[in-house]
Length: 369
Ligand code: GLY
Figure 1 (cartoon, rainbow, N blue to C red):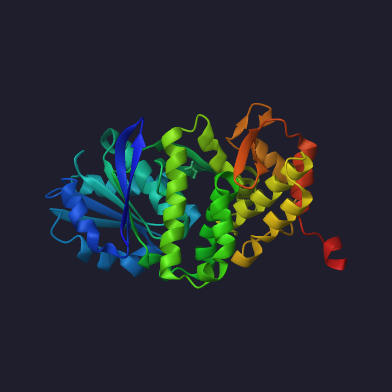
Figure 2 (figure 1 turned 60 degrees about the horizontal axis):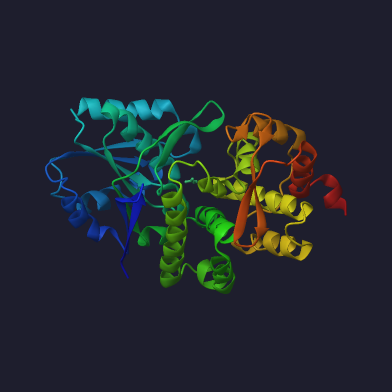
């Protein structure tokens, strides 16, 4: 069943999110957006190029005057300004002007890079998000956060640039490798934990259907998450307040991502971060120990890690304190009051952070025990 959700920015309709089965409804929408006769550049990574590019080009045939594409090697390592400049070079070489369009066909890395290129080329051109991973469908393609990493700092260089359309074809999720699929489940769990206890209950209830990628369940789950994300970004489009709640698990998660040299996927690292943040919530007596263990163990059925070995807690602490989410001396943590309700806590001490990192650290002693 198709679904159309309009996202408002400053109380005015800004862009639509279309939830469809496949790419077949995109062409009509591009015409409606008055893109006929313009130039378009499709950006993919090496994975989405192989899987979807030719099918995608066929689906939009006849809309644009010129269609070019730009592909980069898949991986977080390419999320940098060099890739952005290469996209810009493609646009310049093909005489793109400020009325032409960029389309991001891929996961979060593709969307973030393409959106940033769209934000800065000729002071901003339109771009369309076509997310093809669960993580990008439920989170990164919505809300206009774009950008790239700088050295080892995640998303340090970027801009808010709203897409002109987010087009989700649920079929693309069916071919996701298992690890990529569960990577997105980290963000799905996040919405349940920070803002929607009924989503959390639904995830538990539908666990087996989620495993089996049952089409209706996928559709419902993505729709559920889009509603959550819409609620937050409409209230706080530029992350001055409530949008920060979406960083639940990200402070420690990002530090682990960096320390482990991106060996672990984003959703895996933020799951560890969420377990650590839930532990801090327990220590601050916001949630009970039963609640903590239930939350922690809910990551396991989705192949998401709840412990990690070979980390240096002190190093993780230092790394996260250098993260851009630090506010001078205090680090803002998103903690839980209960399942479905999060808050910003600026009182977490270094000792409490270290204790939470140790909680997720699997050591040789644990092995012997
Ligand atoms: N991915 C977090 C946000 O959009 O704010």
